[in-house]
Image (cartoon, rainbow, N blue to C red; front, side, top):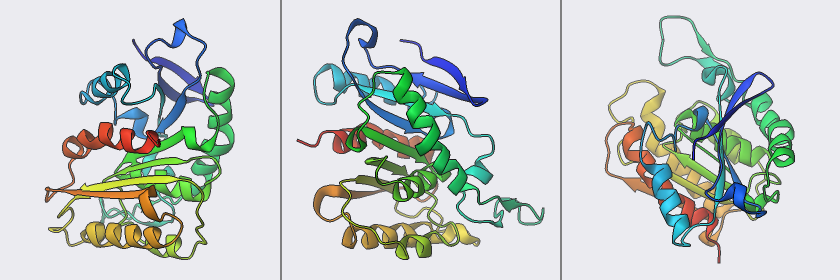
Length: 250
């Protein structure tokens, strides 16, 4: 089934309906994906095929995916204004506009999707996830809107970003019923001399903090795999397992 491509507030959405959507009246969990849905894009990996195979054998519920185009990910996916470490001599900055983008997802985009498609609208059926900066903004958005996004996936989330650890540790995080999956390579950023060298230490620190504050027991999981570099190809292969853990709660 080909995805539906449409515009919402001049932003491209790529919507993947579950198999059998048009032949039933069933409602489905919805997963909001950063970076135009690259985590499941068939041109990048076989993840979507694997997810649909799991659904076909009843090991995963049917899911509706919404891939969201970013106007400027260095602006929208970053929580705070900070020097751009990718172009240190350019004087460019990360825009720090994540709060506006997060509020757009929760208050405008999700209601639109709920009004147009047959979604299960409760928090426990609403996911958000992404890779790298996409993982960072997904966790940031979910912690900012815990009443909206109950299933959260961060794949090699960029938790090296300056200020994000302090922001999380300064929040009052209670048991909201959310589930959070995080993964990363065991030595990501180890060869860097900029802020990215903090990728693994910060990710572990955030995981430990959340594990003790609002995500006790089986509501949080961190998977660390063998990789000494930031790899989309490796990280994305964990998406089907993550989806099973996030959405199979019985």
